[in-house]
Length: 145
Image 1 (spheres, rainbow, N blue to C red):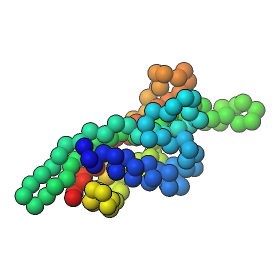
Image 2 (cartoon, rainbow, N blue to C red):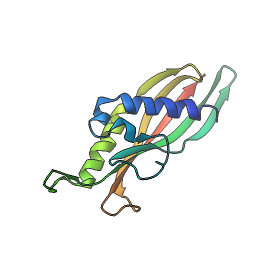
Image 3 (cartoon, helix red, strand yellow):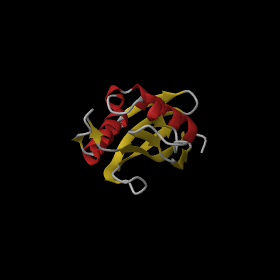
């Protein structure tokens, strides 16, 4: 469990520093968990991590599975015309999230070496907001202390 918080902080920092993500989502709209109040669309949030300890005589660490979520609506121009559908925008946000984190190697003083790999991704209708789409990109992080 001790690896979850440092990993979340590092993932959020990586997303907020990535030009591809920032081209689609403003940095203040990248949240560590569920946004409080009404978020500014589009937005990204870190999902809950699940950890599985890995221990051996010469190794200590964990495997952490986590999701990063992207939420999008139709993009419109100043005249209100749709220039990109929420689904297409969701696909681009999901792809940017994957590019920012897949095969990323981190060295975190609190927990050690971390390697992140994308394991799956999908875009679906967001059931909470009519007309919105929800990208979910799943990752596995290997922590070696």
